[in-house]
Length: 378
Ligand SMILES: Cc1cc2nc3c(=O)[nH]c(=O)nc-3n(C[C@H](O)[C@H](O)[C@H](O)COP(=O)(O)OP(=O)(O)OC[C@H]3O[C@@H](n4cnc5c(N)ncnc54)[C@H](O)[C@@H]3O)c2cc1C
Image (cartoon, rainbow, N blue to C red):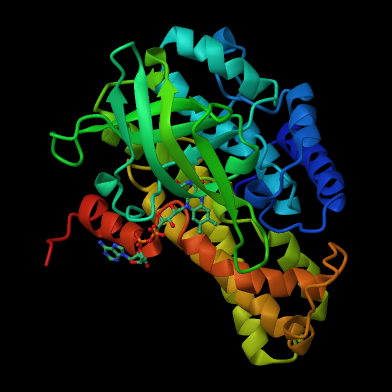
């Protein structure tokens, strides 16, 4: 089957490609720009173009536009490597979560900053001893006799925490409840006293994610989102936004396209790998589109994310083979977006992250087996 986007969508995609390419050209790293590339000016530009909150209701200031319009814009931006990290988490999952679970007052308070591209958010879920198993997290929020909550604990791998204005934090609010039942979601102002953010250097030398400690941080009562102690259901919904999108497929697409001229097409193994990647890309895109148009069953994003991120890893390995020793011999002293060997080498080192962040492949396969296919547990 061949799906064609109508001309207005194609025109929008071309416009977004030009914006994304210009923004990516300003930075030393193109790949994975939605996660590692912070560019507050680009966030403002997207807001000016009404490309933030595109699908949100007009009543809250959103664009009220079809999901396919948002899809083509972000597919183009992310494929080009646009540095979207200042606004992407908020647009992708915080805004939709506030729309679903936040009160009107909370929506009025936090959505405008997201729509204006001025507020950067981070997600405080994982902890040193709680990654895959969210239910075991220990950061606690205890009621303050004077009102509100006192938060103490440590979060880790918090992307963008060093530049974030707000943290969407999951904390234990009822230590006596069953592990899944005692969690709540709090919006925390990252400038509050008691918060310490320490960037972590990843394997590529980048420092986009952080360890964040909260030491008796006071959070107002009206910063609790949704149901007290009811976070687990809300987190599962939030993860659907996080897992099923185009960002899981095209983070290194530009690099792949830039490597294509160097592929030895006389080599049958390379031709086979090209065919596998081209098929994987098309299948992944259809899986994402199914999410976008609302035709995927609940939890299907686990399957989409698994297929798409394994595709991104395959692309990284393929590009490494294409450039061969050039990529292996790259020196980290002068990173440059024009240096394809640097980009490929960096992406090879970065690639394990694709199937870890947002839920590991092992955990997602278990979700597919358990909740989508209903297979018996061993
Ligand atoms: C680039 C990047 C950015 C990130 N950004 C954020 C962020 O912004 N906010 C945030 O909260 N977190 C973030 N994370 C953390 C990410 O969500 C966790 O790394 C992930 O959930 C896995 O948790 P963990 O690292 O503790 O590994 P663990 O849960 O300890 O898992 C270790 C290994 O054991 C396997 N495993 C664990 N349990 C099972 C099981 N029951 N069955 C089978 N296998 C199992 C896992 O699949 C994995 O291979 C980020 C991670 C990365 C790599």
